[in-house]
Image 1 (cartoon, rainbow over the protein chains, first blue to last red):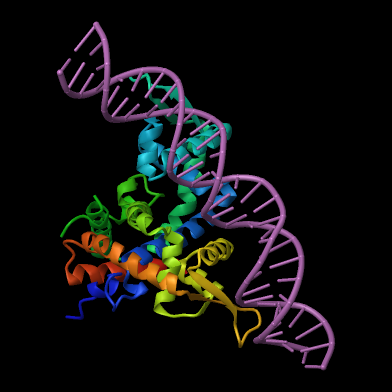
Image 2: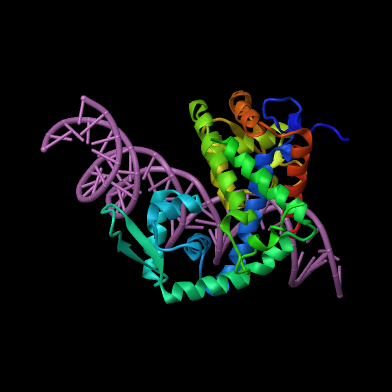
Length: 154
Length: 154
DNA sequence: ACATATTGATTGCATATGCAAGTTATCTTG
DNA sequence: CAAGATAACTTGCATATGCAATCAATATGT
């Protein structure tokens, strides 16, 4: 039974401490993760946004641009430019939806699939490193807590 | 006793699912958090980088630019431009360190302190909302797990 | 059926970001 | 102490980002 740390994470409290602020820890972890992942992807020749798109298309394709943007948590406008780059690089192709005239669908090319395979192989060790010391319970807790944070934000 | 979810978060596993990928959940939560916080700060007239700097200086000041950059997990080059903006806006002042000729220290102006107070008041409700349903144990777990993720990344 | 609202995609534009190169000051090593 | 290494800061430059405005297609309401 230890102290309740919640007040220390409250920006409105005079006991506030940055290191008890979930948002700070979130950004810090995500930021460092980005740096590490980026260095793993560099040899493959893809950047982080590209990688995120490939991961999402790897689960299901084709998908509308807006859907991929939402999944990747990337602004739709930014996603347009990412799609441009990826098409130019020959990683994906765009095609109009057959059922909805507004929609442009994205699908991976063979090259895109190859890059995805390579990126998965390259990032898997990082994943293993990151969850070092995490029991199955710790891991489940982490997913649960992050999900609840997200849900609490509407 | 439930299933071990760790393999589902491994990009190298063929059972990989984005929604079991801690990095994805991290980015998603941080991203949504940013959007919400940004909307709270807009009426006060400060952006997220500015807010992060004020929060850090609120704990201790003056501080060297590099120190603030590290704390805020912001690239030093980017931090330079943020400092420029904040000085121009009258939120902080720069002063050469008395003990180290290389160092430029940052300190808040009265206006900066006022903005910090206002920002804290504005973001506190968001914090309360985010940790809704979090017990003291949940919260402590969250801080611990995020810290361990971070530490595992070197 | 028609008018209105919504959704998806797209682009111009201003700004933010960060790499790389350079300057100055301090530290470290022989 | 001198020389090289390191650290803090600074800036030019290319690129990424996202707001806001626009157009087209579909959905909704009367």
